[in-house]
Image (cartoon, rainbow, N blue to C red; front, side, top):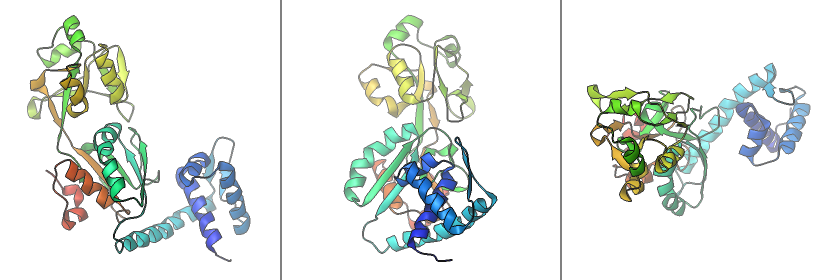
Length: 316
């Protein structure tokens, strides 16, 4: 069977569809229309003489032959990716696309502040960022790296610390405190209106107050549940309820006195933000420089090469 550049491109289309499990998502990733993908897939199936997918109006699933081909292509494309990554070491500056899946709080507090410097320093790099609080398989979803709280990083990944430990606090507007009173101990929050937190696995997150053996976990209640910090902070500003969030997220609101920290002695220290990527592959182009800029911005020392090979053990 004749193998040429056109077939290699079509195999990449096939692999992307198989990995994403969706024509629409594969089209977005590849930057083409779904009709163009469908045409190229039909051409590949005709050329190979094998049906690769079972398709309905709602889903697309690999056939047995398609699943086998996708599994074998994983190794081939990974070998190509590793070879190109190795080649980047001979360049003075990285070039390519870095696909990141980033927690909302991390996108605002860590990613956003370094974007101007990173893109100015490395103009040949393109950052493709998906902001998502869901727990996702970054390999299956086609991301180069993810950014989450340290306790949420999968154990089979290389994880690199990006920040120091994070402070969590309870905040409220002065108007709400005037109406309902200032809590004097954590249990008082159980009788006050609070903005509950729904995390990426769709469960309500208990508020953790204090540290070590003194830590208390409260299943608070209130008129509102929010699945992201922006909504929770906005609700607190509007006097709807007490909110639980990262202290550095509300620095401006605390400075302007639009919000106040209640129970400051019960602030809780949580895991830092970390970036992680698959341990079985070399770091993609631009990721090392991205990590270095963030750590420098956060006042952390640069990683030495031994740290990079066992970055999951890096602590501050």
